[in-house]
Structure formats: structure tokens, C-alpha cells
Image (cartoon, rainbow, N blue to C red; front, side):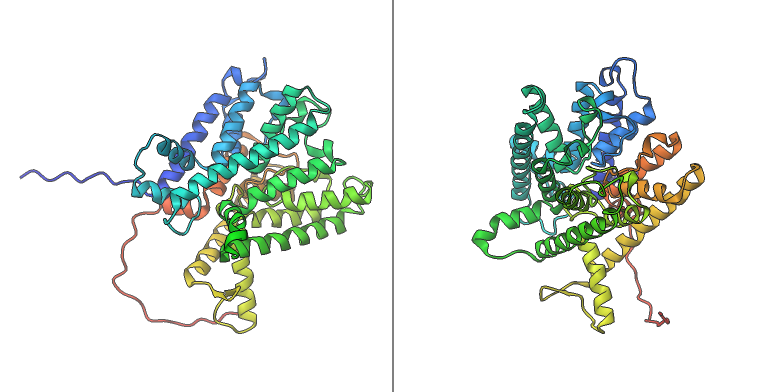
Length: 450
């Protein structure tokens, strides 16, 4: 009797996300390695093309070459598309196309979407996807118009529109790429340090990209519903505290540094402090030279990058909700309380364990990779820790170290960016063996802590 063939195992949502992002990166690396992507005589090698594609797809912004100088219009558009695709997620685009073609969205598609945007329920999932695309087009379009209107004062209109579109998409998706090296003698948003209009537009774009689409939807519905979800309350509260504390610390330290804030007027000092407090948690753009900041400020920025943005956003890090849970756990333990309570809501144990696991895995990754890079590179530990955290948190801020790294170090950072974008837990779920159900539960034991 012939044995019945075992049906092939279907991919889990975590596996689909991991493989999907991997395929997009490979395609992007191939396109960026083509001669048409680079200006004549400056073709990227495969490692640098792979690094740039990974950085764009994972909306990081770490760069090995100057985007505005090295790449042709074709190469810049490839980077822009990778950034947009990486920020929204390929499943969001796939679902949008399927809906346009009246294709049926299967249960498995919905599970992958739920994993991709960190949504807790499948109720109204497709409606949320439509809103995500609508919000993205509206916010990016508005940002592009506002930026183009300002840059049209000093650029040809066509270039101003292109710059507006590129930087609006890059900043909103927390991508961190800029084209200023092709137009100004110095690159980056430092050219507009004294331009309050540009600073405000960019900070709003970073903030909206970092709080996530679920929170944006809650805020837009608030005039009617008069209520916010627990998730939105925590994200907005923690984001507000982190922005205020971050700006205060950066201002207090760097006000005495003549290479950064020390020589600026008071208004520009305050603006720059808030700009870097917001950008450090995933924006990846700067108006002053981060490599000239004091070591204490650089380490503080490492902490901000590690915390990151909100779940379901275009940003990275361990997420502000995870950081809030950790603070809540410390507070509850000190006060002798059993539960972690936010806004009169008790958090389930599963959320607490997930937050602790995610933080431990992220911390282990950042520390171990920093140690490996320290062994491979003849450099101080803080710049390597900064670069590694920036890669994991998909922030893109740099101490100008990335282009100077060896090939093997660049490849290692590529994997760190990949893990940071899809999430350590998602990757762990993708590569773990099929879990077996425990047939017994062991008796409880006690150990001494503290």
C-alpha cells in the first residue's frame, strides 16, 4: 500500500514577513548594483548595494555613499520606492492591489497583515489597511507640498517638487535619506538649521510616522467618539514625556558645546534640541553634527534610539509601549502592587512577558553585535554601539562611521537592520521549530531575587 504523501507545510505569518522583506532587499540590491543606478564611473559593489537596499527597505537611513551625489535619478527612485515599501510593508501594498482587483483576501492573508501592522484584532482589518494608505498619501502629499513651496524659493520648481516628494516620503517613513549633497556644499538638514518652517514640517512628519496609523486614526475619530484606546493613550503620553525629557537633556548638555548648540541663538538651540529629541527615536535626520556632540549626549541618544517609536508605525526600537510596560513593572514592584495598571486598565501577563522578552532579545543583540564589531574594527566602543543601535532601531543617525566599516561589518549591520525592522520576536517565531504542547506542568518553585 502506497503511503499517503504528506502535504507541504504552509508558511506562518512570521515566515512570510521575513521572506518577503528578504526578497525585496535582494531585488533592491540588484537594481542598485546596475550601472544605471550610479553616476558614471561610480558603480556600487554588491556589498554596498546590498547595504543600501537593506537600509532603505528597513527604513533605516544608514548610508555608505552620499545618496544625492552618488545615485542617478533611477537609483534615487529605487531607494525611494524601497523606503515607501519598507515603511508601509509589502503586505499592505499587496492587499491594496488585491482589493483593487477584487481578489478575495484569505484568512492567512489577514493573519499576515495583523502581524505586519501589529494590530490586535482582525475586526475591521481591511478597513484599517485602506485608511493606512489614505493617511499615508494625505500626510506625505501635504508634507511634499509644504516642503516644495519652501524650496521653490531657492531651487528650480521641478527640482523643488522632486525634493519635496523625496524628503516627505523619506522623513514620514523614518527613512533618513536625503539628497542635499547634490545641491548644497554640505549635506543633511543642517542647511536649514535656522529655518523654523522646515524644522516644524519635518518634526511633524517624523512624529506622525512614529506614533503609528492606529493612533492617527484614533486622533482623527476623537471629535466624534470622544475617547482614545488604551494603546493610543500610552503611545501619546510616553511620546510626549520622551520628547520633552530628550529635548531638555540634549539642550542642557550641548548648550556648552561650541561645535553643536553653543554658538547658536537661543531660538535655534531650543529648536535643535527638540528636533534631535524627536528624530533620535527613529527619524534619522539631524540639523547639527551628531559626531561632534559630547559622549554623554551620544550615549543618551543611544537610549532614545533603543526605545524607538510606537508599534504599527514606520519606526523601530523596542517600542514606546514596551518601555512603558517596563516602567510600569518597576513602579508596581516598588509600590508592592500585583498588577500593572495604565489609565485604570490592568495589563495581561502575556503583554508583560512579551515586553520583557522583546527587550532582553534586543539588548542581547545590540550588545553582542557591538562586541563583535569592536573585535573586527579598530575603533572605540561608543561609536560602534551608536551605529549598532541605530541599525537595530532603524533610526539612521550616524557618527560618520558606516562608510569606513569593513565589508564583513557592513554585512553584520545589514542583518541587524533586518532584525530591527521585522522585530526580534517575529524572526524568532519564523525560525523556531513547530512548538509541541506540554503534557505536564511542573510544580512551582521559589528562588531568591535581590
